[in-house]
Image 1 (cartoon, rainbow, N blue to C red):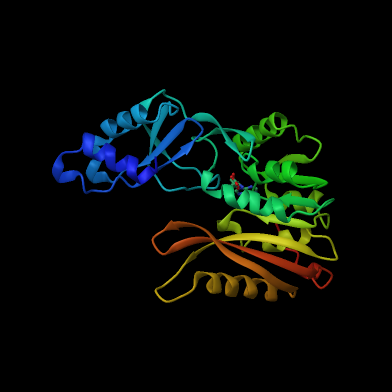
Image 2: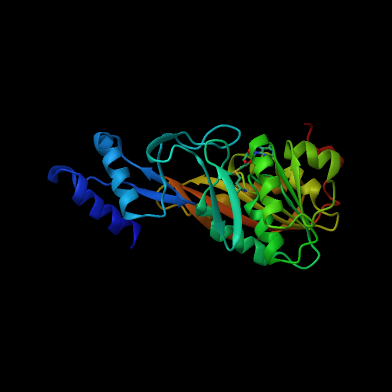
Length: 297
Ligand SMILES: C[S@@+](CC[C@H](N)C(=O)[O-])C[C@H]1O[C@@H](n2cnc3c(N)ncnc32)[C@H](O)[C@@H]1O
């Protein structure tokens, strides 16, 4: 049953007639955890809604409520427990890969699933990939499973994400390809991964522009691909993809690089008039990237 239909049925069951037209804003399922978005005007009914969801979806064992936006360096969200077992950890699957997640300690969203596979399909045999903001490892592990990448260096600064990434790499048997690395991506690139990568992923919109010089330093001297993610706020009548391309073009030109933007797509909506965009950029060579541009840490 589709989510919206299910929510309408639940509204009929648990809300008084005058409240049934108020929208229960939707939910995500991660493993056996359902995460509800409930408007504050339905607060009185949130436990009833959660219990109804548990009854309707027997594979769901925990119902949480989104209690904040994603925030902070580790990109975490606050959750409130509503029904079922009292835990925030679970195990979920994407394209046959298994991921251990603890939603209170690490970032994870099933809404990037399509993007994980899209990138994996772009990776060519023998490539060295750097994932600068790997979280619990879904991009890296799906690339290792579905491409013939030689190595995927997979960095995260959140110790919990790093620990779960190490476990996920083991569970999915990709230890020979994925190398989990703990720390700041800029520092790790400057000290250990200069000019080694054919492809660099930057799946953290907040650092998509600021850390671009480090992604360039990570690329081989004869160039390669950067996939950078940005949040774009757009006004009526403005194409967010054009806006994203303009800001990345400015950044790349200020670094003196020769490049082509080969692709641009909206990954997902993240708020009113706010979208997450990915840009697929082919950097022609990094020899024109003067050491003068090497950013300080
Ligand atoms: C949006 S999440 C990554 C999502 C992940 N790639 C996925 O597909 O599920 C961004 C991650 O970047 C990490 N991060 C933030 N700043 C960082 C930095 N300077 N260096 C490395 N990782 C960083 C956060 O801890 C967080 O796990």
